[in-house]
Image 1 (cartoon, helix red, strand yellow):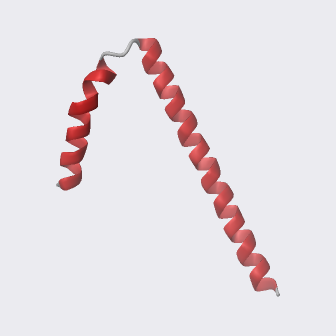
Image 2: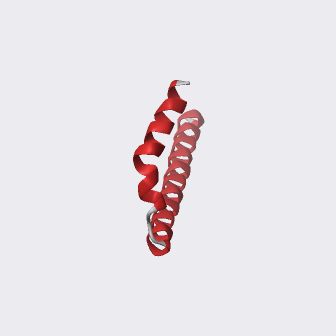
Length: 61
């Protein structure tokens, strides 16, 4: 329940701002969020690749 209350507080604090954005501003916000999520996914994949390669090189010797 604690997390739900925090999310409700965040929505009431910032929800009005998102509702009052123009369609262009909202589209720009969504686009920048998509780019951030994509970048995070790419970094997570690269980190996983480095960990796997590191484990393979350590176990081969």
